[in-house]
Length: 548
Image 1 (spheres, one colour):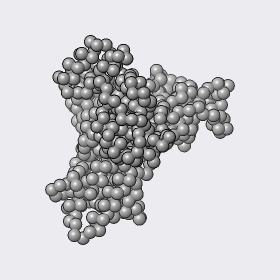
Image 2 (image 1 turned 180 degrees about the vertical axis):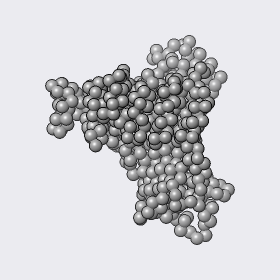
Image 3 (image 1 turned 60 degrees about the horizontal axis):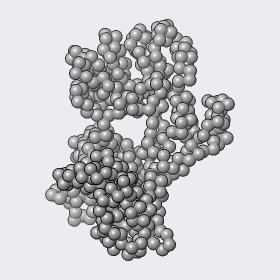
């Protein structure tokens, strides 16, 4: 394809009746005032969609418009254009056809960018038009930084083996810290984790290597393996960042620190633990500017509220948080900061325990108390007493399902009358992976899947169109992207209260099963299978966990 002609975007959009002359005039005035690109002003003003502009440009140039949500680029061709150039010129090599490279550009009217891409590729270019948002998202997906991470790890290994290099320089304790190998390595790891939507980073020393893994949608993926020599430098740097004791290597430690990546503020919780081959570190990534979910936005059945455990509690608090209510939280750690709440961080080392903070909180005249977790009998009893005296108490407990929760409290030693009178509702939840929308396809159940579904659905089993993800660049070829919770709810009615008071677990479980028939975690997982949101395999996995 020849070098594209210069196009006046505004005139083209008016000619194609995508915007009116008046809308263009208003947008041009705003462009002069703000300095933003005309296309961005038009989209943000609601005059035209981003796709509309790209399709209009494609028609004007006689080029293809490509939807990168469904298009699968060829990895070996993508690398012909370095990531820095791809981002700067807003271009991506998509495929090869008729001896030419098909290059998608967000702004084909930028002739300087076109010339630079042609210079780098040294090939004849066939131009396609893509939207900028899809292009940037695709660049984030397809340019994996695994090789860069491995390279930085090798650089750090070499520095640690060089006796002339001071350890303070390696750790970034001197001037020019941002250029220290350990700093560059960690920054790259954090950026890649954010790009891949990782919830946790695991740094694990083995006998002959150091393994870095990311947890994505609940599943761990190996990101890189490096020389075990760099383990000490990484752990020390992370301890310094989180204010932990760098001299203590024999005992576990917990801390936190904050970083900013691509204008996103990230709180990072860190846990170190001594193992046979060194200190293992796990970091939980908490993005602070993603906003709290609202209870009515969590896509749950009518009888349930919530999502993942922390999300559920904070979504509930966000709903309850009004100037008329005094809310105190007792947490370990404080994961999200919510204005208007009085949040207290438990600190066991100075005897600031759950029970001690909770006793003090009750003297602070609260209306609502969030107790992060009922970990022992003393804490559970204080929480139960608070509920019996008119406070709304929200808390968590690790059990297999909703019915197991009152029984677990009794096993902890909480008196029967407290359990019976205090508990109003129990919500149980688990997370299932959601099928990637970009590679979702019809799925024929395997014999064992069909048999399992037959038990759940009966004769309805053969009338449903099941789905699964085929794997694509959007989901790192896993077939899944994101997670959604499944739920069940137990209302403590009179029959259940009386069963608890009589101290008969079998009677309690029988009454509870009858009450919850058709509204269990297993049934909710099947509901997501029927709607095409998750796979049969994921629903079976949840059921296996419940049966364990």
